[in-house]
Amino acid sequence: MNERDASLGLLEVHGFAAAMAAADAMSKAAPVRIGTAARIGDGLVTVVANGQIAAVQEAVAAGVAAAERVGRVVARNVIGRPSPELWAVFAFSTGRAAIDQR
Image 1 (cartoon, rainbow, N blue to C red):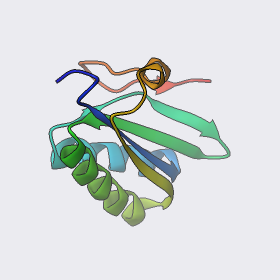
Image 2 (cartoon, rainbow, N blue to C red):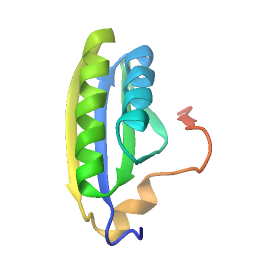
Image 3 (cartoon, helix red, strand yellow):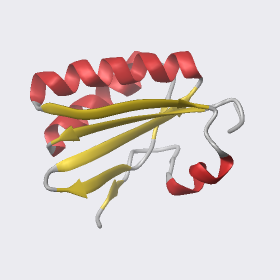
Image 4 (spheres, helix red, strand yellow):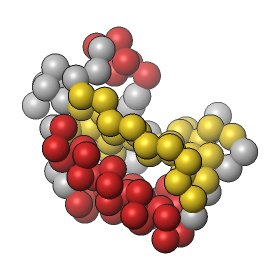
């Protein structure tokens, strides 16, 4: 899959435990890659996933359900075929998800 065919899923939650539950559920629910989880501040964490649009939509829905059991979902969004410049903002690894320490 190349970036032109990929979509981007964003799930912002309150609390690190909710973010990890969401990321775990997202990665198990659909064939997506989980990117860097960004700590926004004030307890907010955004979990990022990419893949085919249907898979990302399914993953985000699973992440929402898991995060709501542990904490609070603040926002969710799926962007189909995002602008190429947007990909530079997000880091995707082939191994474990990294946590932005900013």
